[in-house]
Amino acid sequence: MADLIKTVTDKSQFEFIFNNFFTGNSVFIKTNSGNINLQFLGYSDGNAAFRIPLVKSIPDNVVVFVRRGHNNIYLSMKFVERSEDTFMFIPVKFQIISESRKEDRKLLQVEGGGKSIMYVNNLVTEYMLHRELSTSEKKIDKVKEVAEFELKKKFEYVKILFSFEAKSDQRFKFIQSNSRPLYIPNLNEDPTPELEEDFNHYINNIYRTDHSVSSRNKFIAEITAPIMYNEVIPYGYVQVNGMQPFTDGILEVCRRMTIVVDQLLRKNNLLTPLSEKFLVSDLSAGGVGFVFKDKRLIRYFQEGSKVSFEIMLPTMKKAVMGAIVRNITFMENNIIKVGVQIDTMADKYRENYMEYVESGK
Image (cartoon, rainbow, N blue to C red; front, top):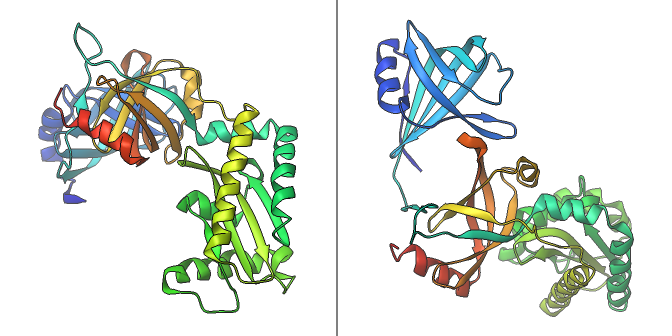
C-alpha cells in the first residue's frame, strides 16, 4: 500500500528531481515485451535526453520510471527527436510514490569466491504447458479416454478440457483465477454461505450459457476440478454433472481423478520442465529475481502468468514453489531479468526457504 503519492508539474523542480533520482540510477521504460533499461544522459533547456538501446521507434507519449530507496518515480514525457540511440523528450510531469518496504531483499553476488550462487531449476510456465499440450492432441485424446471411461461409471455427464481448448471457456477462467474446484452440490437448494459466491457465479456466467448442461433440466449438480501442475499452475479441468445432489465424497473422487490425469500426462512425457538453469540475482520472503541472456527464452514469460520452479539453497535444502511473474526487465549487457512474486509453497519447502532468507548469509 502506497504511503504517499505526489504529482509534480512545476518545471522549476524538474532539475532537482532529475539530479537526485535519475542521475546515476537505473531507469526503465515499460513495453509490451517487458521493461527496457535506459540511461539518463541529462536535462537542459526543458529537454531530457536518454540513451535507449534496442529501440528503433518510440511513441509520442512515454512513461519511464526509476526506483530509489522507498520511492518509485514515474516520469511522463513527450517525444521530440532521435539521433541514433539518443532520444530527446519534453518532461510533462513526475509522479513520486513513496512506499514502506515490507521486506528486505537479499542480493546475491555472482562473482568472487565464497559468495552464494543459486539457480532456478525445473522451470515450467503457463505458456509452456499450453504449447506442449496443443501439439500433442493424439496423446491427450488417449489420456482423456482413460479418465472419461472411469468417470462415466459414476456420472451421467463428463467433460475433460485443457488450456489450449479453452479460448473463451468460463469454467477454465474460474479455475485459472482461483486454482480450486467449482462445487455446485444441488441447484435446487439455496447454497450454504461459504458456497454462495461460487453458486451465483456459476448461475450467471456458466450455467445459463452452457446449453449442453442447462438444456438438460435433469442435471442438478456439478463439480469442475482443476488439473494442476505441481499444485501450482491450472492447465485443465475435469467436469462432472449429475441428476442427484453431490456430496463432499464425490468432490474428492474428482480431485483424485485430476491427479490421475496429471500423472498420465507426465508418463507420456508431455509436461517437461525447461532444461536451462537461471541464475538467481536476488530473493526475499515474498519474491525471487533471476536472470538470463538467451532472448529465445523470453517467450516463456508473461507478466501476470504463473510459473513453477525449484531452487537448491546453499544450505543443501530444496525449495519448490509457484509464483506469478511481476516484471520482465531488459538490463545492460543483454541481460534479461524476471521478477516473480511467490504465490504458493508447501510448508516443508517454505521452512527451508525462510531459514535461508532469514539467516542473513
